[in-house]
Image (cartoon, rainbow, N blue to C red; front, top):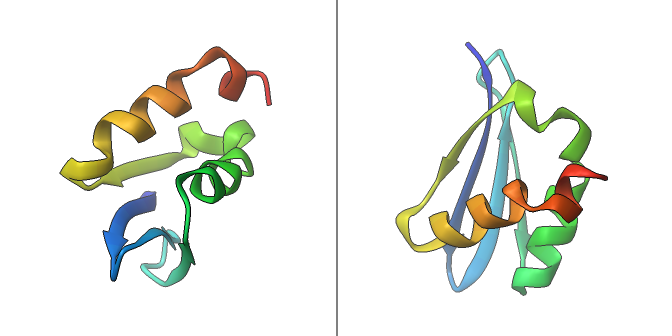
Length: 74
């Protein structure tokens, strides 16, 4: 099983759920889009090791962000 980052909204908060290769997950919630992006920054060097599972409502924002030149340089 590949590691996953599940990114979605729950109770009006942004959520990143990191699921490791054994299927165990750690869920973190953020109150703002900027906080979500800052957390994604910590995955910049290893993002290619993760399968991204992003909700429809956040898909465009997340994909544009992780594809941006600024994110790629982190």
